[in-house]
Image (cartoon, rainbow, N blue to C red; front, side, top):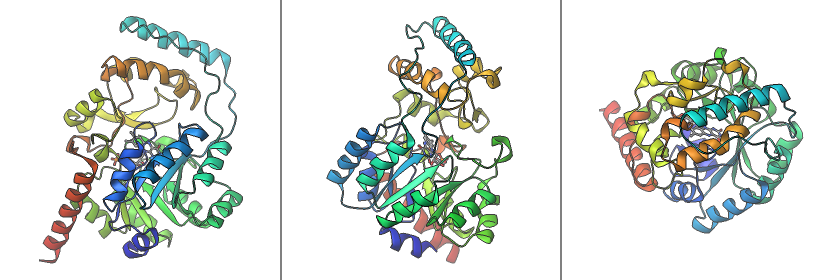
Length: 356
Ligand SMILES: Cc1cc2nc3c(=O)[nH]c(=O)nc-3n(C[C@H](O)[C@H](O)[C@H](O)COP(=O)(O)O)c2cc1C
């Protein structure tokens, strides 16, 4: 399966840099692809225009394959006005308390229309498209296949992996409970879909016969090999690439990753309204009580986004969404191409060690 996937994708290494909406840049994506992995642009928060621009920037920097990733969502969202008002009061009170001048405001839209983002993706025509948060429709899949785009769906359980395989996806990205960032869960309650990668991989390998991509807590070449032994055709690493100079994660966040202790890394709803894994910092401590009274994704995400940007600009890592996987402190701040080379050196060394 490893060779099936890498050969079909035209990449040298069984290594995918995870899409990370808000943190991946054309520089990061092209550096990883140029180094022989598959760089992925996290385009979930980008306007259709920005998707086209960033895809063009990747293309200008490498002719190697790369991926664009989207969150599969409805086109329109209606917010409960009472929930929004109460959330704004709480958020504004927190900003006052923390001495930040920024206050919440009502955005023009809660999120870009998924159908417009997908149209931009089709126009950009990347070799690979990956999706999280839900299935795409059979018609959308057909359109992507007609453009010869390789489709990867995100699953957090065996049932979700089967759903993508039955739809006709080319591969499934398995997101273990360890994984940083938003959970891709779409068939279950978030707390029921926290399956560890070591359990999920062999279970999914038994259930579906398309290539599996392992994600969650993989920070070095040894873990990539371990995932392969359990049935993965490639590994997808997010947190490992967050501290690279090419990532746009805030400097304070990059710094905090290195000191993050495993027990401080938790699932958080209070930034975006959707379960996501990250560091339990000052904001999380303040907002996680009565988190269930906050509006759902993407409403809360849109309300907190300007606050997070202002906090990042003020160097307040303790007030931003410091998404990361459970093994975050193994992060190595180095250029992405160097990290790819280092990961593949460790992977080869671990493989040689096993056969010795
Ligand atoms: C900062 C951050 C942002 C993420 N954004 C996305 C995203 O936009 N789309 C997506 O499918 N997955 C996203 N993920 C999840 C990754 O695809 C992947 O499952 C995860 O990074 C793997 O775990 P790791 O961080 O321990 O390597 C994100 C992860 C992080 C850390």
